[in-house]
Image (cartoon, rainbow over the protein chains, first blue to last red):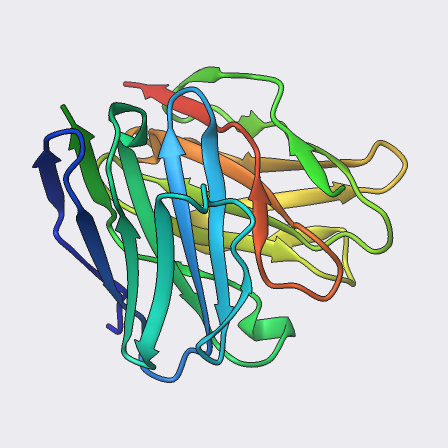
Length: 116
Length: 114
């Protein structure tokens, strides 16, 4: 089965360090999303790409977060510098072209980030 | 803004009994509504969606959901619960018309007891 692949699965780092999370969307999917999941805030949309172009990154703290899609097979989410409040599970999701029967997202297994 | 609410943090049912997980929505325009399930240490998995058409939507693993426009609800149901259905369930709505991004509810933890 095709799946969204995220690396690393777990990351422990110290405050102030740079963190890079990677996502390989399902081949042929043209929309990619980054979500963050915490107990307090639930699932929050951080960034949204369509055909590799950022459509919306208003959910990200701009001073420290950045999201890019250098090519159709790779999406990255960077945090620099990281802070303890960034500790969360970060999910990447992708979706295919079209609507109706294609109207669903496929999620990766997430990157669990702990910033000490 | 489009939003969904899940009024119950947790639902407990006995195996074999019917289950309902509640969701209400607030949207402008036509609602695009979804249910996703999350098992421990996994990403969310799509269960079903309502875009248009029949108010009773059938999805994966025997789940179904009933769209009720007058009550602005989209409750998830299953006639006979399994222990393996125990998971975190999220209701979601398209965050804005014309966009694929979703706004999720706070989630409901379903516990099916043997």
